[in-house]
Each structure stands twice: as C-alpha cells, then as structure tokens.
Figure 1 (tube, rainbow, N blue to C red):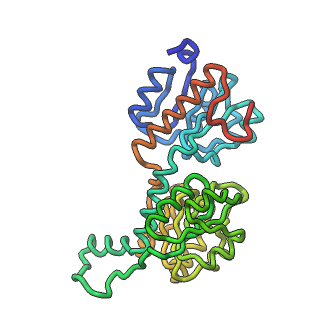
Figure 2: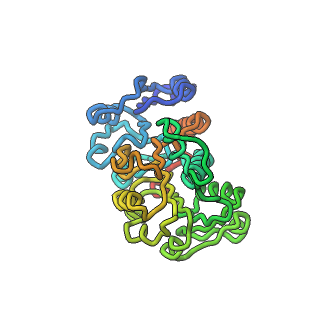
Figure 3: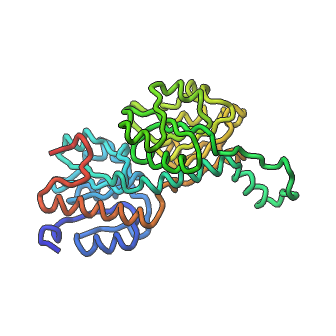
Length: 330
C-alpha cells in the first residue's frame, strides 16, 4: 500500500462483493455501505463533500444539482458499472472531475442473459412456469405451449458494440440469421465472422425481423428509439428483447401492443422508469420480466471491482485512469 493510496478517502455508495470490499479496505481509507441501503440525498451530498473518490452505481442520481455539493478534495467519480447516463458528465467536467466506468467487463454476461431471454420468450417458458406453479397444467397435449423454432429466425440487433457482437456470436451458434443496425458498420472481416447483415435503415430492418434485441446506451439521441411508430413496424409475431436501457423503448406503447396481441412477446431486464416496470406488464403470459440481472455474475462483479480499483490507483499515482469516460480527458 502506497502512501498516496493510504491518504485517499473513498466512499462506496452500495454494497459490493466481499472480495472487492476487502481489496478496497486494504488499499484506501474507504467508507462502505454494509446494509446496502440506497443513499439518501443528504448522505450522497456528504460523500461528495468529504471524499477524494466516489464509487457510485446506477442507483445514484448524480445530476448537476447533486454535483454542486462536490467538495474541493473530490477528484474522481469511479462508477461501478458501464453506463454513465445517471451522471451529469458536462457538469463533472466543468468541475474538473474525472469520471470512469467499467465498460467491456460485462459483455459476455449480458449477452448470455439476452440469449436466455430470446430462448425463454420464443419457446414460451414464462407460460409453462405459470402453469406449473399454479397447478393448472393438465398434462401433455400436442398443441399446448407451441412456441417458435429459433433456428432460421431473423434476429435484428440494434447496436453492434461489444454486447451486440457477443449476442451475434451466440445467435449464429443457434442457427439464427443475424442482422444489425448500428451507428457504425462493422469492418468486413468482423461482419463475415458473425455472418451479420447490416441495415442502413432501422425502420426497414424492423419490418423484417422475428426478434429484436436492443443493445444501445441511453442518451438524448436514443430516448424512445423504439417509439410507438417504430414498434408498429414489427410483425405481430415478433419478440422484443431489452438488456440495455429501458428509456430506449416507449414502454407504454410496448405494453399496449403486447396486451393487444400486436407484438408476440417481450423479455425485459431494464425499464423506462428505473426499477419500476409498468404495472400492466406484470402477469402477462407472453412477457418475461427480470430485475436487471443481465450482468449479475460474481465473476463479472469482481472484475468490475478490479477495474474500479485500477482507476483509483491510477489517479493516486497522478496518471490518467485507464477507463476515463470519452470526452473527459484531462
């Protein structure tokens, strides 16, 4: 432990895996959250005022008004997670604060969950679970719980970054046709390796797909990217999967269309209003709702912690942290 590290005061807003907390305690003057409660605004203000480093997560809203409470010693916001849409980046930069994230660590885990949702919804697993748990299953029937064979289905991936490409690899192994729309087209070699077809027009892609997987970050440009107009371009037999950010889909429109049978099903791990899923989505037999589990593996969480620690230690040494969020270079 270096002298510089020993002086760093680090505030962690949520409970982290024991291994990560132990590593932090060995390196820094760290304040932990052992009961994992969501910090009140007053507690978050205190952490901002009294710390050298804040380690928040997506449950902490660090808007401009909150960042106004940053004390003179605060140097780094080392986000425990990839998404930083809960942090007012422009305000952080104006205050001379560095912001880091843990991008790339959870691509494989999130892709696994997206594939699990694709399988579960297309094969009607939620309905089977409900039938068994309620005791309503009366025995096997040739026409009961008929889902769709996924081999040969067309998957449209919106956002072909690390996670999108990891999903494409899995889908290809299942014999699914991979299509994608993204801001930037993949290089020919990567596109060929994934057997992926690029669509310049999102609207046209939506009209042809059997499954849509949303894999873009939330920003003003992607808010309601899947608007009601675009959702109505989907075939009635289509399935929507979202493991990225809930704000990317007009959740009210999606709910109405699912209830009306205008979209066949959905698998959602994220919601437009934080952890509050639309109440009218609950108990729909053609919808599988998860509590933001896409990245929930112990290996992934420990790797996230290691990245956070590496970023803090870089700042302690006076270096640029390896995961500095783009646009915040010092």
